[in-house]
Amino acid sequence: MGNVDIKKLWIETIKEAGNECLINTPECVIYKSEHKNCIGCSSNLGCSKLAGILLTISLDFEDSLKTTKKTADIILSLIEAKTNKEVDNLL
Image (cartoon, rainbow, N blue to C red; front, side, top):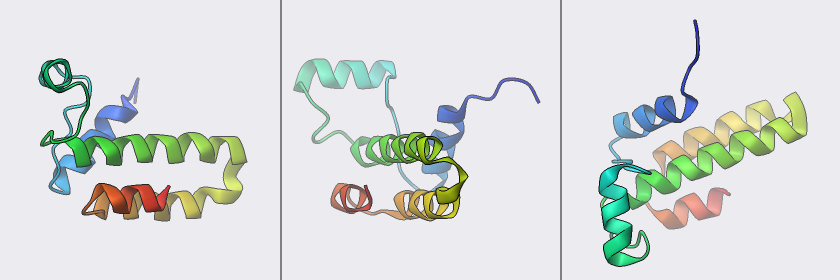
């Protein structure tokens, strides 16, 4: 199958769930240079979801396969989250 960009796949999944995710794009760089943080950005929730998913996956690797189902459940909940507070509560 070749190299797969996991981050890109998750960004597409987040977009399919209805959230924008502009993390590290030129638009993101411009927004952060003008506002100093991500608060108010139209992509804030999508980027929070991506960060949560990647963090959850990295923690799962540390704990091996024993937490794979829990990790999958958390990721699904992150994708369905409607607010940053929900994302924070899942992590």
